[in-house]
Image (cartoon, rainbow, N blue to C red; front, side, top):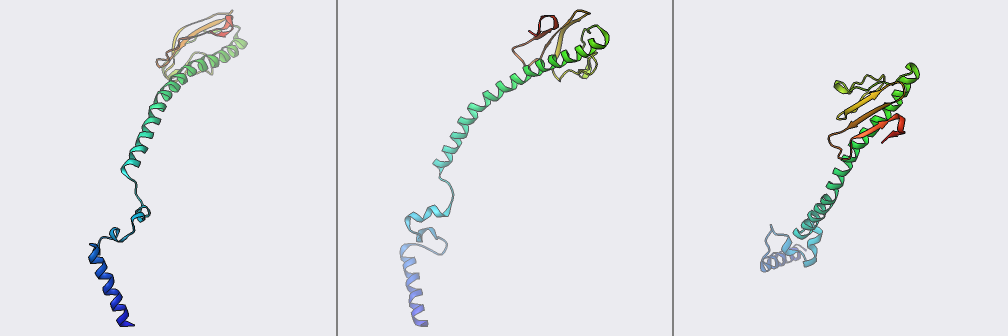
Length: 155
């Protein structure tokens, strides 16, 4: 049995030397289709993935900018709607509307109302019959927005 093992061992070494394989190169002794089991990606596969990611980014970035601009405009509209609620609460107690102000840090003279960051107040009036406020945001290209209590709210 020892002799049979030695013969088989020498045959294996001889065939490895004959095929040009050495003990550090295992790929040469594998069959032709066995490379896929070793893992890794080809250059073409990597380029396809990079191209797909580039196309998705080219579509998503302009949409993201559009949504961001719409959110700034919505912030102004929301502030004017919240201001209307606070003005009506003030009118209920004092029978008069305030001419709104915008102080540092979004502080307003209307009780329980604060302006959102970035919103600017352009003009404001208030008396016993109604009030108006014109507000804008620097990153909103649609505005400025006007709230007129006598003409039905947001204009």
